[in-house]
Length: 319
Image (cartoon, rainbow, N blue to C red):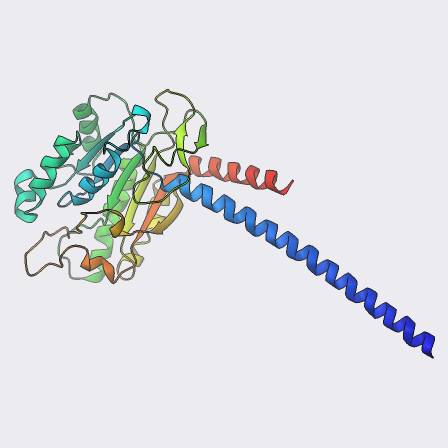
């Protein structure tokens, strides 16, 4: 009987040791997967949200041009030389100069500062019409040159439509037409990019990044173009179904992130209808009770290539 008890005890100990070994192995494997996932997410997200001095940027639908001015100050200040390379920025508005001045009293001062910094300002730019983009090329004298950042913050038709359904449809048409036109002017990467540590030299506006994408040679090759659209959350904006609209234009959502207006000093959100002292919300008060989100869209071909690169990266880490 004592022998039987001893044998049973030994068996139980062996089984417990086996369970402990399996648990330790599983914990090690899970930790490795989690570390790999975190590493991949960090690097890829950093690459996706970088805006640098060498980018060719078009801002759509500026109101009082305070966002454009904040972005330009971060990109083109003297401390951010970016190895001497400088792309260009164009800030556009659908309004005429006269209408802009009437709707946004502070806009003229912002535009003057933008001009002094070498930023182009275009009035009566309709982002839903291809002819506007052709006119942009002529203005810049860039021939067939493409852009790699098209940014549209808080798009809205601004027609004062009170019927919810009609309002949603009007804004969906606006975004769909914008996606169709803008997508044809995005750059496509012609050569590989390397991830290089230039955090001290290259300013990634609004974000603290350890890595930013830089061309692997001194040529004028650009990274694949991206369209950034920032929306408020909640109704009716969620019912716009922005990802579906982009998909219908041959685009895919690469990533999205919370938009922080405080990352852009001096930026003051304004509605499409204009700003009225004492009636409109000051500064960015209107955004504080909503979680605004920026969506980054790329061509479907670019998205497929990126997915293939991530799979190869994951495979290399598992080996």
